[in-house]
Length: 119
Image 1 (cartoon, rainbow, N blue to C red):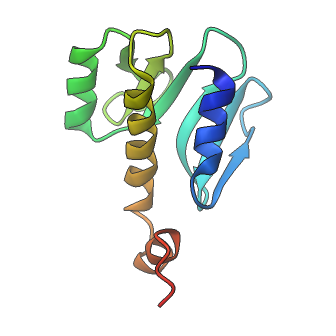
Image 2 (image 1 turned 45 degrees about the horizontal axis):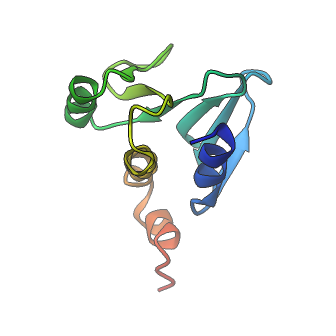
């Protein structure tokens, strides 16, 4: 999986914006102003993702390419090296989980809009 694939997948999520608040070296993906992914611009490709603490530990034990978040809260963030050792589908699921972790902490009305509930 290439960096461009990760970028496109993050941007495919509802209401996501790409921002560069820390300079042009790291793209930051946000939903409603809350960060769910950080993607360095330069190789080697890696992505940092928010994660439930229990799942974060399981992923770190399962995959050597998953480590505590670099320069982030190590309890809630993982950095994932995208080196082919983790199936692409699993990485996409990690992105989904990260996005969901952020969305579930947003106000209920915003959650409903993001989930496509128009009522």
